[in-house]
Length: 211
Image (cartoon, rainbow, N blue to C red; front, side):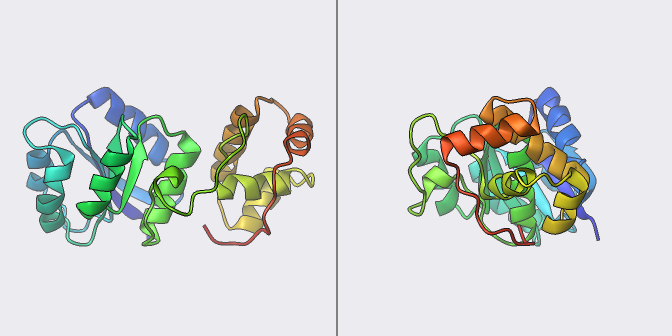
């Protein structure tokens, strides 16, 4: 069954851009939109599965709006979206009970990753906000675990269709990951990606079928 999403942001242009991205996620179905906490609560969308909530909103902020949104959407996971990735903002989001934190600068692949993570009931906060974050050498691309898995299969010559099958993803999701990998590595072909991965000494974790 496809998940029901609610996008809450007072900037219609940003909501439109975000909608165009999230509607391609294989697990997403109906998408509702609101420009404020009051408008979101007025929708009475009790069956909402996931809320992407902007922190900076008119009237009531996203942080202050967590409680009323929990009442309006009792079964929904709520991920805060912010232009700032300051540690104190992420810490406060955790403390207020948010299920995740997504920077507005996130790539489409990172947004897909956050949605999947949230819908699976797992917290989705930036890696640098937790104690388990691993330091990266200067100049090393910030690839997610899933992107490293896609890269490891890409480097064996597997096409997107096979990578999608092996990882239990849709081909569209794999294409998004591949595009993000190319952007991070600064390449435009699979052979160039392989050379860049070898040059950078990127680890390729054991591939599994979960996200």
